Length: 395
Image (cartoon, rainbow, N blue to C red; front, side, top):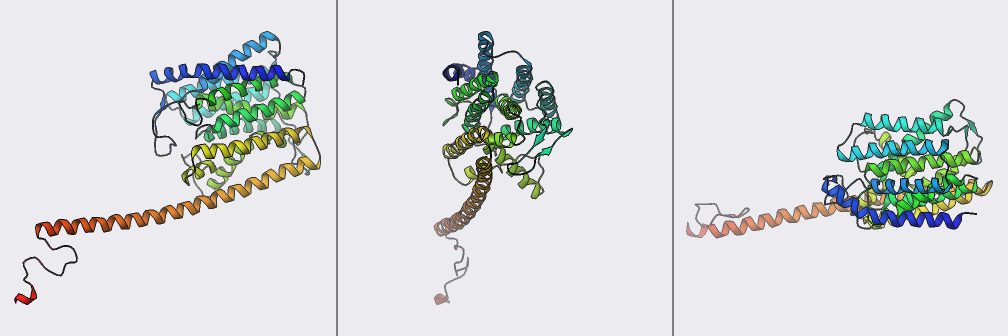
């Protein structure tokens, strides 16, 4: 690759700058009381500044200016189709971090951003194909499918940003994979942007993992999720192969699978989709007693494997790509089943332990009451003597 070393340099420079400016953003957010206050669904115990996406996107914007100035990125339709929605979602996320917005407002802005991207970026998928299966001509539904994908995955990414480092690792590894795919497909412009975004996300991780001094907030998770969703569609259009979208989907597979699996589970249990919950697979692991660092590390390994497979299969073809894709699907289903079983077992154990503790506490309370009663001359519970009665041998 002609500019490989320059792209790596851009990624490292963006990461270093993001790492350097984020402490100032932490102080700024604290001074304006833009904090994530813990509640019953939170994974943290103390208030933490949220809105760290401001530093990520600020450095990304600076990188765009530099790349445009150097001529490595052109202000063409693809750049505008991506940049305008990122700015809109950054503003939406920031205001949502400050004071929660209505769901309708969020969806309106997200829908408008996705429509802009599909129209200007020419992201309508003409066909969809799973490996070894016939292609399905989407026709009129191509733009609709692309729009739904952009809005849907943007929200999935936002929902998955729940423990330290999880969203950051997904952004870094997926952006690197998208850079490789688009560069190999002949679109070096998007590859530069993806490398810059990977660097910004990597620099942010320094302050978000393993101990979080700042959260991405909606100001970060919404633009990052949209960037990756856009990248998957764009990479599929760079090399117009019907099955490439499905293969490129692997770059974000851990988040996509967790989101879809959780959604289907709630539908089958007839739960309201709009209600807050803690049913994601990563949340079940945390609730079962796994550490945040361990869960994030496990997901990061899966992300790395999926990103590498996406690049290998996206650039290849034939039976190997099909075998790799379906192996990932089956392995994901098996892992989900194991997580559900592990959570159920740990839940049963926790319930039994809670029952034992409750019985122990009740017995301790009875013994304490008995000792107190003996001190003041009142018969203890279960004592055969009755207040005011004489012993039998004195009658």
